[in-house]
Length: 192
Image (cartoon, rainbow, N blue to C red):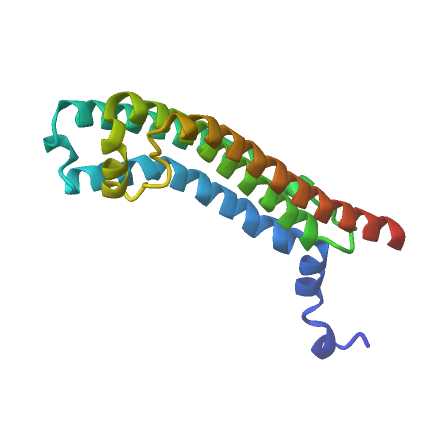
């Protein structure tokens, strides 16, 4: 049937089947998440000003400023992860593959794990060290004020555990991503 009435959606369907339909939105999602990482420290600063953190006394202000610098570094690292990986989304599947959505989602899952693992591992450890040194038992109160109670541990135990958690997050996400990718590669190779 070469009738235009029955084939006018063929270009759209070919676009979906090529995988570009999945890769392009994920590319933009990665870039939006990269920009959100840069905005995050500003949100924390606004929350701190709203909750009058700067009127709580010297050690809390110094601790908050150090925590804010750590958050800025984490935001920059997160931006770099998402921005770098956005350039690799197009490589996650080929145009002639039949299974194109699984590799793209797998890449997203892997990148989420890398970002979250970095944030929890590096951020949790550094923030816990600052909280332990400067705040002691006041760390939990500051964490609740900034809606970050989970990250601000303030104990020696959390200084050790957060890097382990971060590593496990990265490894777990990578294993799941590679399982999905392997499944898609086997299916695509079997088809050929």
